[in-house]
Length: 345
Image 1 (cartoon, rainbow, N blue to C red):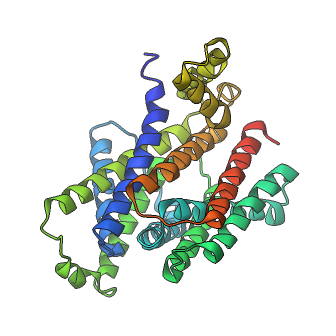
Image 2 (tube, one colour):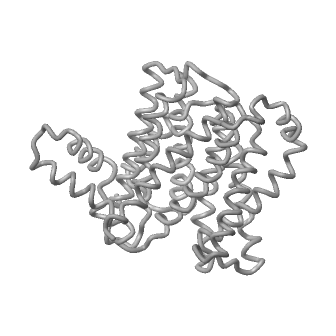
Image 3 (cartoon, one colour):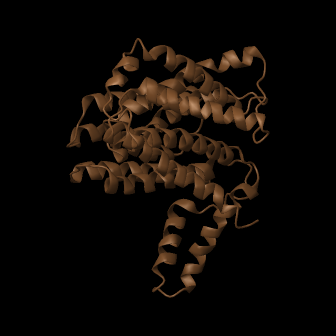
């Protein structure tokens, strides 16, 4: 039983990494740059798998009244904007740059909380958000692979992500679960993207795609749809957990971090795991809290760090010292943000 508990957090990190790499491979290596079709396919697969899981009793979906569904449609529009603009941006930008720009969406949510909702914001949180903003603003100036279209769509993606988070905070009916929301997002996205594929020119342009009948293209698309669905399920699972058991698995890494002080230095792997744990994965203080958001933020931050760090090994990326400095500043900003959420400062 206890060996199964870490699977949720580990699977989230692995699915995040695999999903991001698979999407990047299809978009940048195979150059299938038809987002209405690619994202339409992913949402179709995700919607079908979620519907099948619902009918088999593996997940619970309880669609509420029509008025509540209609009230969620603005978020579904933003969801389409997120995946469409994200697909456009990821096809042109390196993964670390894309994630650094995406991190700046916290500027929108923090600004809304401070200036609209008049919430008290700590100086440390403000500093973390400023780090994210500075990194996102300076990246286009120092990027040796500067692509104006890529950064334009990254900006649209950033705005949609921030607006979606704000809407999600404001719209919280008790009878509407995250799976309900995602189910509506899938259905709305399939309908909208399918309708837009012809006016956008993607429907017939894709017929000239050179790898259309290649096995690696078919397998990559199938993998992207499946991985996206699994990532969504684990995201919902981690976010919706309200008990200590959901994150008890990560105390295993916390124990490693403590035990490594009593181990010989020759055990380098344990020391590295302990260091990573102390920086990103220390959840011992959060295991008994009713709010799982800080723990989920730490998991997602760790997944982003691993994805961004490994991506240059698989995809071409040219960077100078200034570009790397911007990426480091973004990482520091996100780490500080996770720390403020974890400590409540």
